[in-house]
Image 1 (cartoon, rainbow, N blue to C red):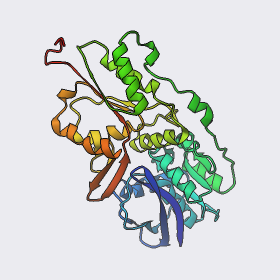
Image 2: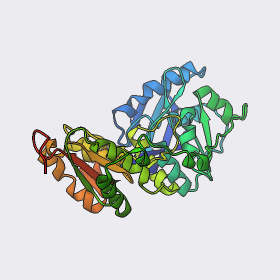
Image 3: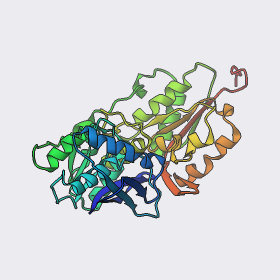
Length: 358
């Protein structure tokens, strides 16, 4: 018997639809996952099988073949665990609901059957809404992040057994909505520009930079306040609107840096990487390309303290993103583009000892 369950995956900071096609038939126990899965997905068969058993459902001798479509796109991460389990339980008759065509399942399973939090939920929910999906079932810990998007039903589940009971209409689960308007108004800053006394010329330079979105270089003796001034810059930048906040949150969600109790980024980012940072950590990339510091500073401030200490080739990679306001990462598996519209603020001492007088 064949069942088709809908799920989603990520391509950069954008989600795309994946069909989890599950075929279960009698025969010698056999389990195969196809459709360009990575190692974490291939390991799903042990997690899903054990989670189903520990949730109280029997999985007798079965031949199971799972295909992840589209088959020409490489899939990564444990996000398909829940969809696989649902597809198997539909085939075995444990789930009796047949109205799953407009529902998306997202989530990783533990061996006990609990549904665990995953990264990148927000861009998946945004894409699901664009596709006209009516309902998304995902880990309970992700519900605040996902419910920021209006116009789509978000259901959080804590474990596989709870999900089966819900789909069989044995229990009801409520949806939690984030109060987006209240969240936006609660923005606060570590250092406020109004708290800095003196430094009138430096403050005036930052005001001009903030007004025009210009980059800025602060030169001064050690301890004169360059770092504090840079930290205060986000407090005089225009407030984020909802679309900007959503775009920043997507990046942090994909990078796994979104706090569980912070469903939406409301402050303009301030990133201050150390001068030993690598090229990949700065602009993004890796075996599984992830956003770098320039993308994490999107719509905010990237502060490079002790600018001369950074390696030349590290600084050279900033040339393109500063001009294009985005970064394109090309790898064997494909090409990804991350947004990188940031203000570059750097600081340095006037000389090697730091105390040169102009």
